[in-house]
Image (cartoon, rainbow, N blue to C red; front, top):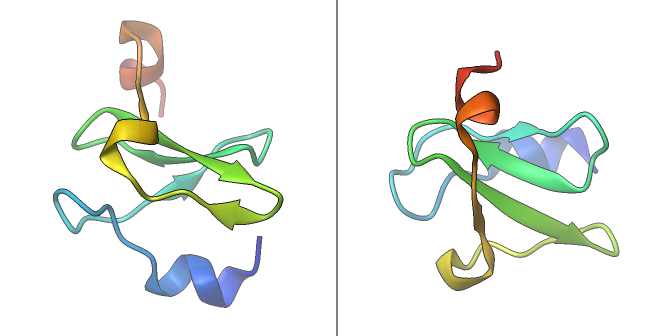
Length: 61
């Protein structure tokens, strides 16, 4: 994922920062505990497409 794109992307719900998952398949918002998928290099920033983080992922830094 392009770092410039990541700099301007924000969580669509809380407008907070996102981080890239280790496997680069998701953008994670810790505040809302959601993971937005990245498909073919394109982030899908729809709440309905996001998955909820489990407890271990929420506590993980």
